[in-house]
Length: 521
Image (cartoon, rainbow, N blue to C red):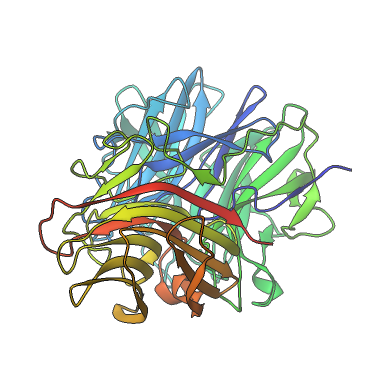
């Protein structure tokens, strides 16, 4: 029996939404303050995924200027109808005001349209449903019109939408308020029509430990909807905090071309206690139907690390090399910026075969767009390294490696000037308080920096080039600083390359010859 391993998308890939078009599957996830936004993937077998690009890859589509961590793009939904792909999502601003919009494309790899912003569309987590009669419905969540009976009490609502004009039309309909009052934060609704029933699948319980998936059905799209007496149909909250897969929820149902059903959901892996450095990841689990209700992973009822693979021909994609030598004309799809990139601060052509980062005044601790190019941490234990050439000329000019959860929780492993002389320094920023963990004199503008993480034990190394052995700068640094359980928010840990003049103007730059990332067993 062929099996697969969860998570199918490791690292910070939350709120999965997936569709089937013929024999092809497509999936998107949330991206919050990172640019480009909404990564989109393609699969033939539901297990192996290849990134096609990002739905929101132009500044005209996504302005993240000064956005605070864990705002920005929340919970996209992907849909397809009559040759057109639709991605609908919520942009949450710094005041937590919610702005819903959709974009379209005829090719999921892009280009996608500029946003169509929707008026009078309160709440988050919008979804689209195309009914058999040609009508299209928008569904999302909102504060109940009659008021909230308890904290985070939300209403799932539905309204017809005219996609030609980009406007909601007709009355709003409250269709469900969840399974139980303890299941607060009703959100993430998706509507499906299966066997004459309309089903509304939602997330409840908040996106933390009590997260859950519940479902209701009706013979009429407008309701009334009856909840499944077996709700929640998926949760791990009853398994305790020692279980290695936690906060399971925010799901999507997909039917294969052979009539089998599967559920995508988010969940987190814990590490070194109840710490979730990687954020919320995308998992897959089988579904069957009994009495016209879905049963998730029959006989077990939980998401497993290993399951029987879908009955689809296996389609593996070429794996990206562990080392990026920056020899292509554009950045690989794995790389992101913090917020919308402004200014010409990075280049692959100024020095071919290198990623050049210009120093910017912005710091990593600023709510700005620093000179940072990063990728997700995808494994609980990993090794990352980079080859850098950098010649600072003033105090405050720094460049190096960064391990990032947000502006107030991160590690910075930098080359800079200390009392006028070159030094390698390691800083930890925890709860906004900065501490230098280690420093060593260094006498070359060329350096290779490496970090090894084994669980929450982080060690930092350096050398001049491959002819030397790695030298330990510091071992045993506490990686929990990169967990959402300390830092808060909804994202996962990133790592990458960084250059800053820390408030001053500078014409200096750092050249990165390569960056490598690999899992440690």
